[in-house]
Structures are given as structure tokens and as C-alpha cells.
Image 1 (cartoon, rainbow over the protein chains, first blue to last red):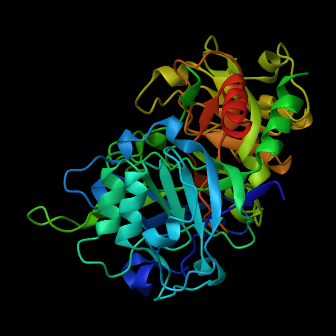
Image 2 (image 1 turned 60 degrees about the vertical axis):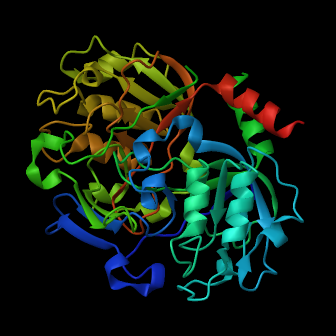
Length: 220
Length: 220
């Protein structure tokens, strides 16, 4: 495999945070074929935290920056998938201290969440100590295979620590079947102005595939 | 410039096809900060043909293929921006015959549409003869800087010819300021299941930037 599509499919019965009905997307056909003639046009209504998405600071920081501040340089990264399948409850600073983490890293945490298709109430989350550790290390971004990076932490300290440090947060990844290792992460969220999050189709590409693509397509 | 974000910003007063009110997106704040405490959560409701998007065959072909059939290989291309600023009314086969077009090409047509910020009723479109010519040449995809590839052609023959040939159609690009030439096109539409189109954040990257990125990030 050279490509991994690590995004959740969006449909009306997809899993959403806490299984809240108000987080479900609605997909409405607005124009359709009649007797085989015509066109199909659909409208999507979606909470911006449903499915695979990127959070901007305004999600959790009052008057924080919005999606308008995202730059195209924020859409292509070297990213590392880290296997944390052994974690039972939450990712803590103690666990992360066993991993070589450098400033500027983009880390994708693969946990037991990727094995569940529905919404798992006790999903593995990023505990406050881990978020503060990552913020301190100045990582560029983190991604996780759950619809939230925290679970019942009052004041959402994990979001706040990471968003304040300028770390991008990618939620709702599907990492089942993706081996640990380094990839090119393509994650360009749709260009909604002035909001606190945006849906994204996140793709992991093996760097050797991309190098071959460039060679094959442009060096002829 | 090494990156060009060629996508339209999505907001409630953005230009939409024919200025139809029912094509405008709605952006609704569902949760918000009170006295500086809390979180922001927004819902987006959008017609899938508003803003920068990719069409699937089902848009114009009865029982045609949907977005579910898109593969990650359909999201990274060598693409060529072709300057057609001189075209006044429509792109015809005659105009395209002056351009070297090969099977498998992805062509992005830069027209006077990119100079207009609002919806221009007489936008430059891809006339039937041009669509049939492109289908015959077996191009992989085409993109244009208008919200539609055709204008008042009964039966939508340009869409039908291209979609039947398996050509991807990228609409709503913003190509102002992008020099003609070859780029890596990143265009991964959000993963909505079983629909006829999907919003996309389309980015053009200079191949030399991407080659340097791979070298700098992975060959250390």
C-alpha cells in the first residue's frame, strides 16, 4: 500500500461524538432525475466536529484564531504514525516520554479507537499531562483516531494547551491497517471562512511513492 | 510562490451559481462561549455544487457512479494551468486544438472568470465540442475557474461527455495570479458517501518545492 485514506466516511448514520443526534449530518437531495432526465444535486448539513476535521483555536479559546488563518503550508507534513494500541485509558506524559519527540513533529496516535466502528464512550484520549508535554515540545500537529482528544476533562485543558501552543489538532482519523512509520500527510481542510474547525480528507502517502511520482511525471 | 490555494472561501455571501438563494451556504453557531467560558461549535449547510468541488458522474448521469468510487490515487496529479484569458465566450474544440493535449493529462483552464469575484452570468464555459474533444483525448481531469463547466446547453452535453469518459471535473477554482505551467495538484474531496459531488480544498504546489520537501524531511 502506498496510500492510506485515513478519513471517516460521512453519511447519516455515521458515528458522532457521544452519539448526540444533533451531531449527525443531514444529506438532502435538492434536485433529482425524473424518468431518467435531469440532474442530481445534494445539500450537506454537518457539524464541523463530525467526521475527520481540523480544529482551530477558536474551538476552545475565546476570541481565538479561526480557520481563516490556515495557510497552504499547513496542509502538507512529514507525519509519524505511532502505535499506542496498548494504551487502555488515556495517553499520558509518562507514555509519551518513551517516544523520541522533536520540535516540529506531526504525530498521529494509533490507538484501540481505530478498531471500533461505532462511537466508543470510553475512547482513548490525550490526557492533560500529555497535551502539556506535547505543547512544551512544540510539536506542529497531532492527530488521533477518535472524535475528540479529550474525555470529560473540565475546562478542556488538553485542547487549550495544544491550541495555545499553535499545535494543529486533527480528529476523527481512521488508522486501522496503517503501519507505524513516517508518511507524507496531506490534510487540506475545506476553506470555510471564520470558523473554529473544518472537515478534511486526510491522506497518508509513502514518501517513496511521492518521490517516484515526481520523477515519473516531471522529469521526462 | 511555491503554493497556490486555488479554492473559493466558503461564507454566507459568497458567489453561487446563478446567484440562486437556495445555493447559498448557511453557517450556524450551535454552541458558543458565554462570558468567555465554553466552546464554539458551528454547523455548515452547503449545496455540494457551491464553492470549489469535484463532480461525480451521478451529477448528470442517471444511476452514474458516486463520490464513493473516488480513490486516493484520484487526489494527486500532475496538472497544467493553461492560460485561456483571451477567450471571450466559450472554450471550443477549435481553441483546444492549438494546445498539446495528451491522454492522462489534467488541465486547468484559467479564463477571465478568475478576474471576477462575484457570479458572472456570462462566464466562460466549456462548449460541447471542446468537451467531446477532451473526452476523445482521454484526459484524466479538467478544472475551471467558474462554478459550472457549461452555460445554458440543453441536456448538459459537456458534463455528460466528460463524465461518461471518466474525466474528473473540478469546478469553482480561483486561478488569478497563478502562472501557466505545470504543478502538482492536490485535490482530495471530503469523504461524503454516495453523493454526486464533494467540496474540496484544491492546492497547486510547484514540483520543485515538493521534491525539496521530500529531500529535506525524509533523507536526513
